[in-house]
Image: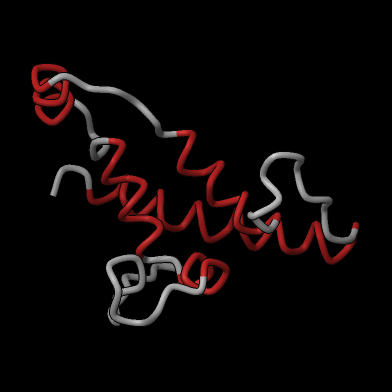
Length: 110
């Protein structure tokens, strides 16, 4: 419950950031694919960059300290929670409905 407000902010922030990215590409055109990452569309790379932002290596001790003292969820849960609640993520990665990354019920806030 302590992390609820921050989880909501993560979900809403991801949704708003992706909406802004789509507006940017509508105005400026679709971005070129990155060399070496051509298998990903620019929209997919948006979500890869989001997840990469939270990449970390944690020990059991540091994770316990984080859970006990940080108002945010551990990074792994911030990523998976936000992405599984994102219809846009499921759309651009073509995740079938009912799979772990596209559950039938999503929590949407804005």
